[in-house]
Length: 262
Image (tube, rainbow, N blue to C red; front, side, top):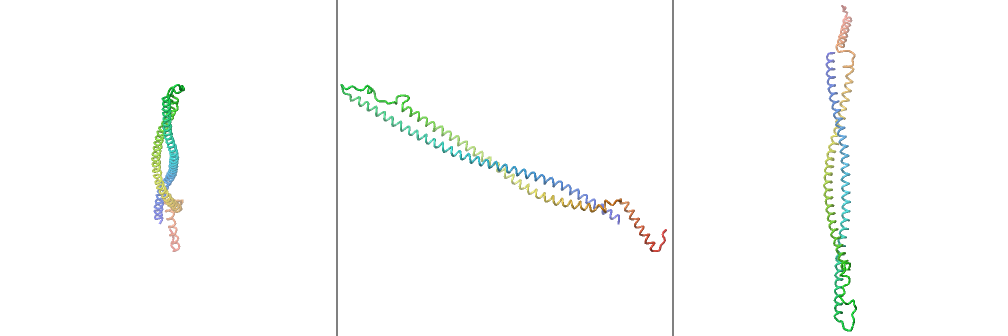
């Protein structure tokens, strides 16, 4: 019986130690995995938030640039329209003045042709009336300069409008590409975060179950100690003690049976 108990103890203690070692290793691995997944999930959450904020900034910049471009375009179109209208007005004014000067010249010539002696002509009639058109600072010259200024304003504004439109178009294209890249990256990280959360939940559940098994194995080990480990006697001593007890019991039975002991 003692030998059978000893074999049982050795088998149970060995199996229990193997279980405790395996479960302890699993708990350590699962704990490390949970910590890793938890850290990764928090990192992905932060990165997703940052990407979301960057995309919002892009949308805000695009909206602001679109509004400014519309205002700038409207202002340039108005400037160009005003410059064109001014050029037309200057051309009309110049035409009217030229016609006026032509008529004045014809009238002077007509009067000169009708001179009758002994009438003395005013000295101002010695030549046709020319007004200020022949002088560099004359009205016609001033109108031509003004017309040139408006034409230059129209051309420069048209060029500036074209440059601004191209810059805006490039900005919109770059913003669209940047947003698409960030949106794709954010969605990828979102999928990865969901996968990480799933693994984290499963790992926590597995860790909890494994930890419970380890606690049960430790409890069983404590249960084995009194009869298999902490007996205070070695196996040989327990066998000798048990044999002595059996011998004493046999002798007692013999005495009770009336036998004489040697």
